[in-house]
Length: 168
Image (cartoon, rainbow, N blue to C red; front, side, top):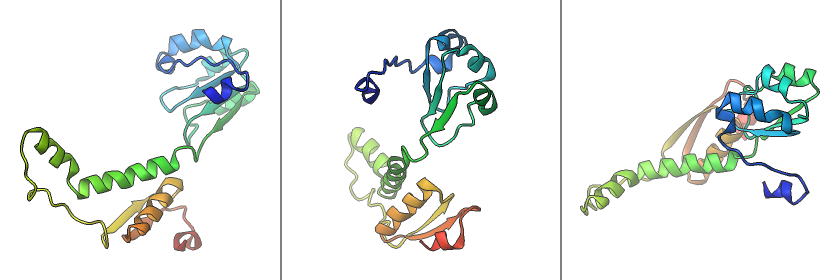
């Protein structure tokens, strides 16, 4: 939000507004821009009430929660950020795999329970293990790349992936 403020754009941060359709409908006439996540549904009724609205920015890859025809009819630009969180999300997936392989959640719970069971939680290495990736778009491709960096074997499936891209 600071990037907008630094450029003279007035910003109201109302993270729960999108969860309350009536409140969003009442507030929207005051705004020229709307930044949303997946939980906010921008319906034709909301777009019709948004008399000053010029842009809807969706944080994330999809725009299926925005009525595109209604926005287009009103001249409202709808945009998304398909690459915004791809690296973060992929690295989170790899981190979760490591946590599970090393039994970190169980070991943490055991330690918090006052036990020290170091021989119980040995875990396994990810090295030379096989990872299946279903969906090799932005995030899946980054997960596969990180897994290859850990010297894992990667098998990927994506109905939209060309054979040339799969080799990469």
